[in-house]
Amino acid sequence: MTTCSYCQKPATLTIVATPHQVCFDHALEFWTGLLGYTHTRSGPCVKYQQLCSCPLCEELTAAQVRAGALKDMPPSPGDHVGFAMPMAS
Image (cartoon, rainbow, N blue to C red):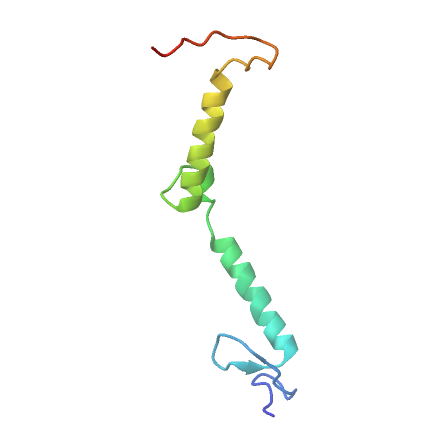
């Protein structure tokens, strides 16, 4: 078994960096730092500013169109209301 590149503990995990074989403590430090770095560098989600052409935004756009169409329609009559249907000739 190899030892951690940063200390003398046994290297039990692999990270996506050089050196890649590290102990649990240094792997936890690496992943915590990487996730913190990427989170602070990411900008606001594009979905909250504008819609893009990804499948998720296209589904969202279709749902918004359906909701808008349903909002403008009057409520449907109940089953007890009769209606006239023209006969086909």
